[in-house]
Image (cartoon, rainbow, N blue to C red; front, side, top):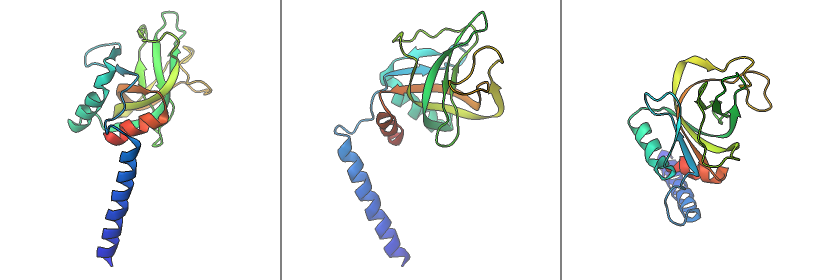
Length: 173
């Protein structure tokens, strides 16, 4: 009975994989609209070449430099501290994780000035601590009353046109 179940699952997996391949005509993962990265040693995140997103994510995951990856909505938030700063906060992933890039007194040179939200695939590392925004600095995810917080150290966010493209990118990893 176990052999039959195993064969059945193998056939089902093959059929599912075959169907997924027909939806992606060229077999390559979609290219991110843009890629925001937190370089080691740099205080502020920066925009990287979007075509490198798949290589950046694959390399970090295979080298164990990151252990959390997920899809979420992201919003660009300007803090209102006086000195200011640009932050990108995410909604919760299916697993309940949240991504955050940006710092006090850092401004992101976004490629599209009207870009304020979108679908991302985030990449990060689980931490033991909780990183939290400052009370009174407008560091809330839109629609939420509490100051933004996360237990991840985010290293990259790849932005996509829609959730379907983000899902294809994640599945290709």
